[in-house]
Image 1 (cartoon, rainbow, N blue to C red):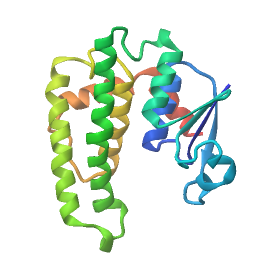
Image 2 (image 1 turned 135 degrees about the vertical axis):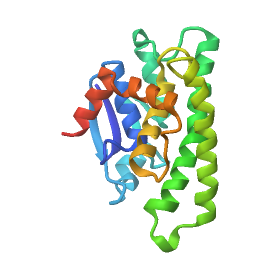
Image 3 (image 1 turned 90 degrees about the vertical axis):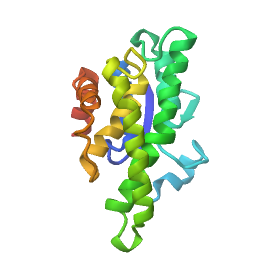
Image 4 (image 1 turned 120 degrees about the horizontal axis):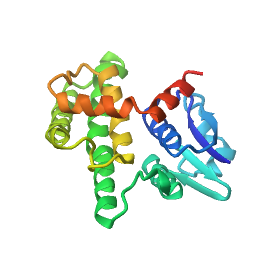
Length: 208
């Protein structure tokens, strides 16, 4: 059976998207929470699995894999009937393109804005970083909005790229002083992703 090492908060962005991917491929797995606040990621037994001391981490027999997008890609490859990557080189490259877009653009902008408006203590918040992050986030969403006005998913068919982006959009809405109402196509896409059975199942499991 697969083992997923993830955040004690199963709704944490990188943990959640892997949990939804596991639900999409209908894979059985054991969940092992790692408490970062207690430094459990630095325990010898965990560092032996991942010297970088990061979560999420997937263990499949003797195969150990870090980085959330790589984990989702592996799940999509391993459980190919779920069709979460695309079948042609161009389709698969497009999936990777949008995963990269999220990890290098959308997510960093969200995280910087979260840190410097909500998470950090007031004296640690830097307005210049918050302003820059707001512009970068608006730019990223501005790229997604017209695309999702033309097609129902990021690549034209449902893929792990949709999961990667949707978990970030969830946190933007829940945590940030940032109005996404000006992006109706994005919100319609987000509703399509989050009303899927696997998303709902992963959210229900996280609540227990």
